[in-house]
Length: 113
Image 1 (cartoon, rainbow, N blue to C red):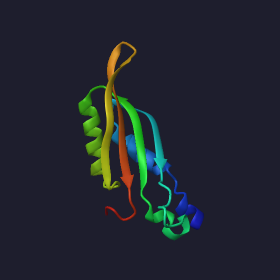
Image 2 (image 1 turned 60 degrees about the horizontal axis):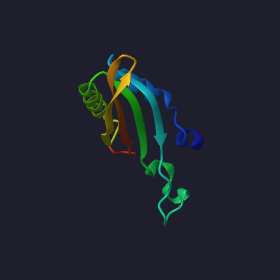
Image 3 (image 1 turned 30 degrees about the horizontal axis):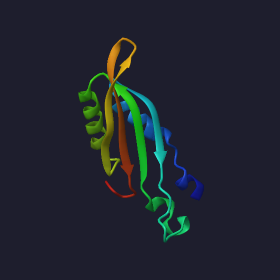
């Protein structure tokens, strides 16, 4: 039981994220990170459920508006306590100009219902 709660199946989350992308956004990478314990408390004292996790999404979109719309759709999912665009910049992709983006989604236990 404890192993299941400490290592939940991320495929459901990835499926939900994929459904929010739209036709004009492609993910290049996603990474889920959990910060380490604070200086005065061990991992056992804090427990994994009490530390926020951050989902980092990196990808490309056809226009900046597509990135903003993706961030709004992620917020509307009510899974994340915070959704923030970290970086956007134009780049060449073949013969087209696209927007390279990063979005950070923070997951805190009990943050939203």
